[in-house]
Length: 205
Ligand code: SF4
Image (cartoon, rainbow, N blue to C red; front, side):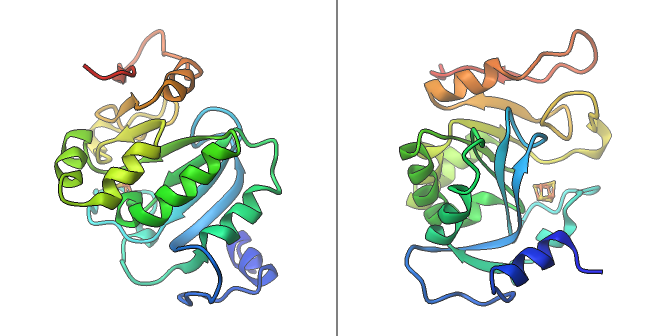
């Protein structure tokens, strides 16, 4: 039986690993979910990018690890799909490692902001490392600039956390990178007990 993703690709006339001749930059996706309530606050449009250098033991998305593979979508194609889901509050960039695709994702995130949506980005890097990389990589800098809420850090199996919303392990942090990020943070309930997930409000000190 075909998976949801395989059926979606068929409906869209897409084939795996084929950059398309269309406008907008190309994003290499492992898959996407058009409406999700488990990848950030509210109903969200979610992209899972292809390629991840972190290789966390116990990763739930090992099919995203290889840098080759996946399916190429232009940012315009993704926006056309996003526009079919007006109930979505915003977009979530997940993976894989979204910062491997910083250029096209920053362009996409900017368009989401222009539509009034917000941007949640997952990363296996810590913010401090991303800032270091951003000194010499303008695409990482651009995506950081378009992210409202960053959920950072690798998945650590020994710290796996099933209770807290939107993190996989308790070492991961919820970091608001904009005023919109603070609103997203406010909509994530804190657990009365159990592991404490670090929350960092904007502006960072
Ligand atoms: S960063 Fe995420 S996708 Fe990459 S290996 Fe770790 S858990 Fe998996």
